[in-house]
Image: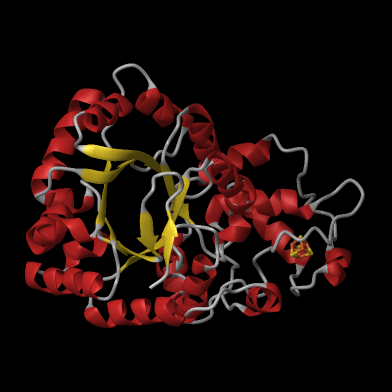
Length: 369
Ligand code: SF4
């Protein structure tokens, strides 16, 4: 299996990373079979978090493969923000994982500037990470976050993180375009190793799992961390990695045009409908932060409907989007007819209807469209 460099760490990772969250859903025996199979098939990056089942995932990894510790790169995540508690959590992780060192330790789920300030400030989590690194318990310090996240750009600018992990998939590419257009180049420029998670958007892209994972493999990331909890899933992901070819050019454009999850509703942010004094993307960008443009006010199949209801507020940023719209210079006039803009959209989006739905969402149902 292809291996790629993780920034400047000197580590080389298999393009399929093993995401340990779903180990909490299965027994220790099954977890052991899965983890050992992953290593046997050429995988070498295993990731978990102290918070996954309050240590359940870490303990299963420790029991199953600590005897093969020199065959894999091990990452875990800490989500307590003060140094004293974080030190205790790191020691617990080492104990549960049955190892004397963690290769990559994440400051987990840093979503706001306030959280970042707590992590990096005096007595913050970073002090525990640095002390653990000095003691040889941790090799590299990393950060992770989800969704709309200017805070990760701030984090990389303020602290020399070795590694960063965030979501990359072809749906959120259009919802949070700054991740690929700004954050990723910034990390590559600084030599920060980048890991991709959520390549199938927490299951939302289940109808297109293969192109979804291929899309993530095709990005300049070191590894794509995939959650799995049975051998069939493991086999599927590993064989895809072994035979994958990068996605680019016409194939990529075909995916963006035809993917059912994008359909004729998700704005691809191409800008072709922009007219003097009004750019619909400014509204759709906030709709994306509000609910990832998932609710198109249609009920098609039950499964995608149920998934969108589960996932559209997954990152909890709807209030932030509504506040930004409240002070935005680009607002929808509910009395205006925007139908004329639709003819310029290559993706068949009914721009008048979408603008009014977005306005409805962003004004908290104050408007009846
Ligand atoms: S033309 Fe369509 S895809 Fe492009 S910005 Fe406008 S609504 Fe979005």
